[in-house]
Structure formats: structure tokens, C-alpha cells
Image (cartoon, rainbow, N blue to C red; front, side):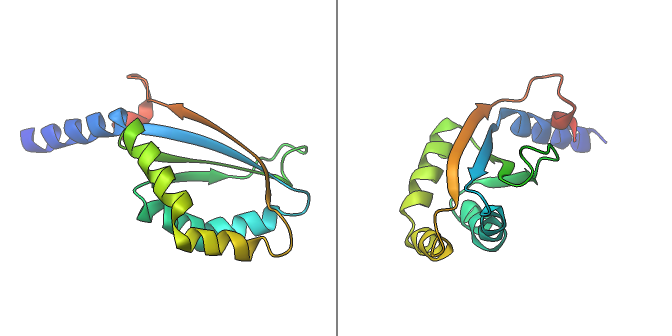
Length: 128
């Protein structure tokens, strides 16, 4: 039982120490389906390839946002890992080919917002 608790505690500490990145993508009109397809079929795998851990992905239910917004989070070991992952991702020839092919009918993303976050010690997520 003690070994389990020690392992559980360590896992919770590692999760709490991770850097979380919340990203909000606003698509050009009518391009959200293309954005979702690109994430589903390519981007998520490429994130993992470059050391990012995929979290949750959402489409807002708010009437003004539901047709042009994708919100998701990924996590990183730390800020340095995040910086390296993004640098490697954007320079990956596979990503460049995917981006070009997916935009054959026009640009997909109009705007990207992001915020980096750390879990607080009272967050229930660090105990799961």
C-alpha cells in the first residue's frame, strides 16, 4: 500500500509540475470543418511526435463561437520543452505539407490565442 501511495504521490506531483497550454483557434468563415479534420487526421499525431501531450479538445456551444472556434489544451514538461516542441513542430516538413494541402481551398486559421498555465495545489485534476 505504501509503494502505491508513493507512486500515486509522485505521479500527482509530476502532473502538477507540467506546463499546460490552452489554445483558442478562430477559423475563417466556413473553415472550422477543415480545421477539425486537420487536427483529427494530422496535427494531434504531430504534436505527440514533437513531445506535446494532447489534452482535451472542445467546440463552444455559444452561438457566436460554435461555427468558427476550436479550443484545446496540450501539456509540456516545462517552458523550455514547450518552446522546443513548437519550434520543431513548425519546422517539420510533414507539418508544412499538411498545412499546405489543407489550405488548398483557402486559409483555415484567422487567429490563435494561447495562455500557459500551471495547476494550483487545490485543483482536483492533480489527484486523478
